[in-house]
Length: 416
Image 1: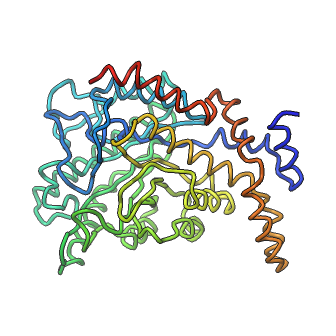
Image 2 (image 1 turned 45 degrees about the vertical axis):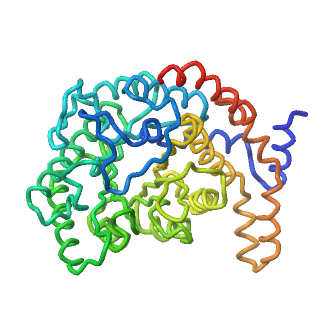
Image 3 (image 1 turned 120 degrees about the horizontal axis):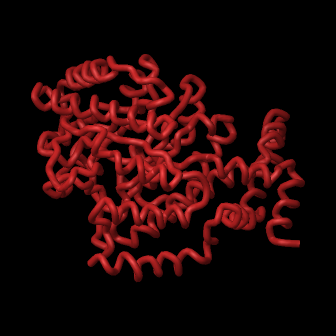
């Protein structure tokens, strides 16, 4: 009997069909963020060194992607190392601008044609983001909520073009492109006119969403934030602001795990939101003390998010995107570890005997419920994960270090 057959039999005792679980897991898309490959730099000209807006990637590990071709090469390597259905999440600053500087309020579909063709060749779909940071017109901490009308109009045009581009991508790929909107607007110190800034942001969003696009082409998501570097005292687009705006205007809410207090239970928010909203976007990261976006690991917080999506029956209504950046270690290894960790968390959740757990809960058998949950920690989960990797043509955990090191030696090491 193989290891997987042992695991299959163990889970079947509790009514869990592991073969069905593996099939379901393979079809859940995870959107891989392009910015882990180049430290959130993008390919605008002149070189857009990180200028502010709360974006910080620490470290200078060799092998950073310096061109679109190198970034795509690295992403293809990641595809070969992570099992399951993948998407790719692009920021507007990652267009192919032909070596010339294109202002963000002038971007067009033509700058992303190469990405669409590449995605089609690699059988992945694309998602998109406006880039509201690392720009002189974001240096004062405000974009769509700016009281400077010139600045506000610049970012309004950028977002309108991002939505148009996202809709075009969706049409080209035959799958809705998820457009996430995050702005850094806020203050480092005390703010008096909070109502005024939020009124301006509402006015900006109302104007942006005057143009409607079919849901089968693009979906809008609004990303909340508690605080960030440079906006410790006040964030215009707070959780309460966007939750209300999204609900009233039928837009998707984006919850970034790094945008809340580190002790908050993000998983607890999901059932409350998904009870009323048709869908949600998740940006999965691992914050430490502040919005630091560390590489995602297979830890309790990640498992709890996955468990809530599965237990609520809303997994198909959640768009899962990764959002971390670490330049202090091998960037391919960081990518692979984070994406695989999210996929493992989903598998762990899908293997739960949910019906039995609910029955114990409803009959007041608290001990049995607790004991069964504890038992899940020592079930042969690893054997099922290994089988998932085999079925999807991905390496096992024990093979990753050697494979990543080989790519570093053969590819990344030649870039310096």
